[in-house]
Image (cartoon, rainbow, N blue to C red; front, top):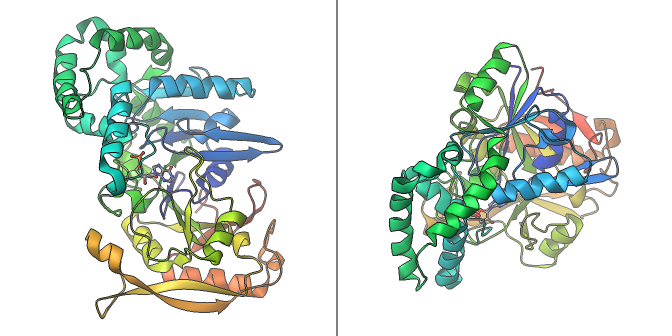
Length: 429
Ligand code: IMP
């Protein structure tokens, strides 16, 4: 298995950035296959910190970086992110960066709609990142999206714009908003088109070429399995499939190419936005996890909700995504705790469940069943081998592995690339 697919196995924010960066430094190509600039990946390389939302993490190391067709692309956010990275000394050109020409665009009208809906929903809001992700995916499957390839044919866009605007004008009217300003939209597209088109190509073709040449491909997932539109905590989810299978459909390579599935798992649980969270801690323990783990959203700056590790959820994510092995992150946040808890099942109206039910009301009502373990006094931060870890921390990791029925391939012990315990190399196995 030469290729690796990285996905988040919780609600996103598992620390994918560092792991992906470490793998990207050994890959020949890195591909984003779903989501958009709602993602937030922080890479720490030496004394430089790079914050990526849309670009694949390989871009920082100069590795061929590809935005696949499964992504929704905001052209203006793309330009801003490229300019920010260029200012940090990263070189980005058509040799090391490509965008699928069949990728749907996020337009200002999508951002508007995202905001209008969230505002109107009040307490029932999803808590989206406000980037227009959901409305853009709706237009994709509604067959009215403007795609990257359309930017080369803006003079022939009339009938597509008719369809798109008819839909959005009706929705906007419902919110008391004026119709879409078609002329302003087309002018904005005309202005940004050459910038995007310099990177546009049929990336399925390029990827198949590099695959045939024996390249190592890294598929970089965004968000997490519990935010998957089918398998997540619906409707409190994102609008794409975040599971590993999307690596194939969202890039134009078949499922046999996706290789080792590495699930990124945080040693406790966090979530941003609304929705059920059985092990959430609204006490000083949750507060402490948030402070020690610096749990603030990379994209929106929102405070993340924190709780104990939920082995039921992660076992489910690993099964659904066919996870080969996990990378466990942020164990050091638990350092110094007297006791640590792991959720091993749920109680729902007198019944014990070993899985997370699909219905939103059941998801909100389940009560976690905990197993309590002793914590550890020493530190795990910066450990690079098992021998560097306190014995009780090893016990915790082993118990996690047992309960989720999936082996640990890596343990990440700090944001630094080198602070990693490697059990099984995803690129080699
Ligand atoms: P959207 O993707 O902006 O539509 O937001 C839908 C839900 O997914 C919200 O709960 C967001 O907080 C969450 N979400 C989206 N992207 C991320 C991410 O990269 N990390 C964590 N949560 C995310």
